Amino acid sequence: MSEMSAEAVFVLGLALGLGFAGLAYLGRRTLWYFTSGMFRALSFPFRFSLRRLGIGRKVNAEAVGSDSVEAIKARAAGRHQTLTEQALGVGGDRFEQEEAHMNRQGFIFRWLSVRVGFMRMPEELDDRTAEEYGALAEQFLGREVPITADQRALFEDIEGQVIAGQFQSSDAGVIYLLNEARKIMNANVMILSALFSVILGIVLVGNVFAHQFGLIRSLGLFPDGLAFMDSQTASSLVFGAASCLVGAMVMWALYYAEFAPYQRNTAREMANLLTRYLARVNDHYRTAVGKARSVTVGEEREPKRLGEKAKLWTLNMTWIALRVFFVETYVRNVVFQIRRNSNYYLMFVPLGVVIATGVILGGLAAFTGLAPFQSIYQLGWVFAVLFFLVAALYSFFLSNALNALDEIDQGEWISFHTLKLNHVLGEVVGKYAEDVGYWKNRIGGGGL
Image 1 (tube, rainbow, N blue to C red):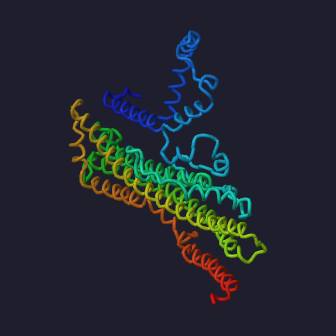
Image 2: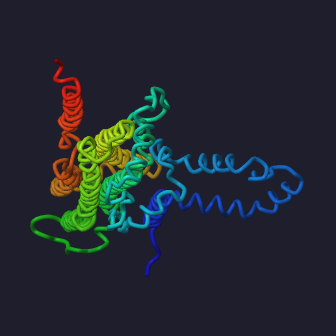
């Protein structure tokens, strides 16, 4: 085997460097943990010696108290968390029940599945649960509305923080799952746009390098003396067509084999859980409505006890309906974030790859004496047409990246407007008023 030319060594080194840079970027968090762990291990003798001397002593529970230690841990865990996740208390063992019934599957792209048993909510609204709900309703209805917020945060994160803080005792599980599904769907779109942009860039840069360094000629795909075109042009067209075809096939496989079904599965899991979750909430709502209507027709005769029961079930009925309202509000928040963040990825990731490709080609032209931009022109109109078709396929896939959100249809679950809280309150309050009027007339002789 003949020795590699300087140009080939340069191309190979550039490709390896870009590949390692891409791997480092994709695994940057793992790399950071590994690097920080390595430095901590190397610096352990020095840190141990300093602690023996009383310098840089570790914080412990005996020194500052367990509450302070928990606060330090919470701040450390919340450095990379959104305000919503901090309000939920993500990072500890609070969501072990939910995590035990959630699976994140996939290799390049991921999808979220939720098994039966996810919900902690009791199946029936008994008296004990109603008492707990009544206490939560008292807290919610008497809580001050927060009007201050972190000016560095996005508004939807602030809204999510408020909702999570208001209903973390009752609906934290479903809010947690919706937030995790949002992160997975956004990450999939980011990876898709990055991979497709890199594939498109590789097709272009690969053809430029092949033409610039004469690699196509060295392949000897066609003999000299062709009637319709010279062998170099014919070989370039074949190489260009093959690379465009391979790029299109890889994009097609990534989109239809993993991305599209994974996104749709995650959206369906979100919709299915909302349907099941709000159906159970609706069962509690109907129970509370029935109990509120039947307060005056039961065996209870003590006025004070009757008033307490009427208050308890009316609180339950109103608060449960408001839970549905705010859960749907958070669903709107999540869908908005998925669309907004995904559109950012679909715009700025390809733009970044285009800029990076232009910088690479410009650097080659400036520092190596090569002429990559001239090579693009010399590839001819046939390659331009083929590359345009691949770019059109690329645009088609990215433009349809959010179609999976069609699975999240408000008509599939019991919504706030279907509870008809206005009519139910009218019926319950009207029934109480009718009973009061009946006894007033009976005792007072009809007002005569």
